[in-house]
Image (cartoon, rainbow, N blue to C red; front, top):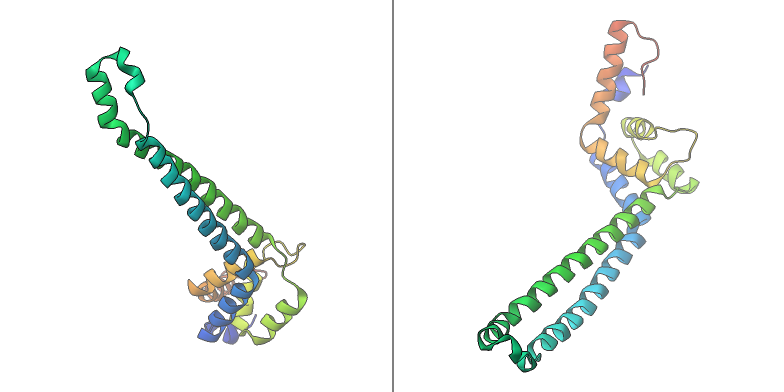
Length: 181
């Protein structure tokens, strides 16, 4: 047990190193998501204008059988109907884009981190930050993933190093020889 090294909190440099490493590892995914969202938004905007123009050009004069009042109501509420169609389609498109982004994030989190990135990260991190990274890497049978690095970064920001040190001190007081990491 190393009580002196873990009482020291991760530094700003540790957080910056994690942030920069994660940015490098997830940049492609983020750029792809932004490009897809922009392209879909531009295409939908063009289709939206066509749909509204189509709705404005509908001629209800063939429905005179329904009566003049009904025909007047149809013409009066026609723009609102097409705006509702546009709103529903926008919600559906937004839902699919949201699911796309979630899927891309899930794929990015599952990506394995190569050995050179891990060795660079480990050589530059403080001992308390490495301890948090070891804590975040829960399944040691699998290699580190981007998700493990993201979790370690989040935990460093929320004070996990202090909590690990406190848990070790509690284990020492209680006489537990092997506290969980």
